Image (cartoon, rainbow, N blue to C red; front, top):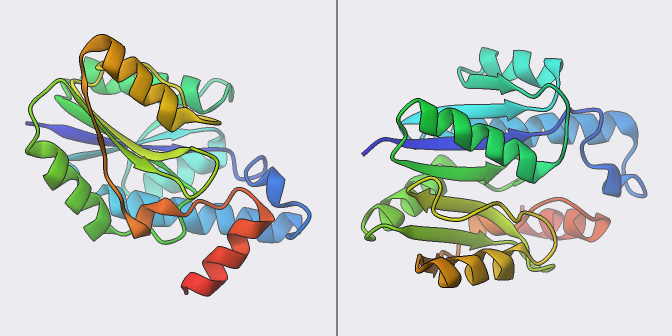
Length: 197
């Protein structure tokens, strides 16, 4: 079974806008780049790493980090980026995919490997979601087959993924991971990150 890990990385200049009250432009860019590198390194737990890049700079650094890269013609949000990555993975023979956020400051290779091992034991069709702290979001989503359910990233995405899975008869599993639960979207998330480290 070939599992692709698809890392969705926004252009560094447009990333982390909701952190503006707490961080300046240079700090937000540096944080976005640091977290993107962590995500790409963690993604090597899968068989193939694909970065869906929201800009030329992201595309260049992701390639330098050793990832396969799909440069978006324009940024149209996380769901469109995910759909583009899924289409590439399916076209090249992926049996399963893990969609991974690039703003997880605690993500590790071991955490991704554990998720893939757990998910790999389940019978398809299956969706395995890693919930975000607060806001009902989803920080990672494993799908086998890759088109098991559609994309619903954003507010309350966990419930939307679950609802579609139930409608389509796809097993839906929650995978709790401290390393993947925290994403940096709001200034309060920076406080959580500081306490975690």
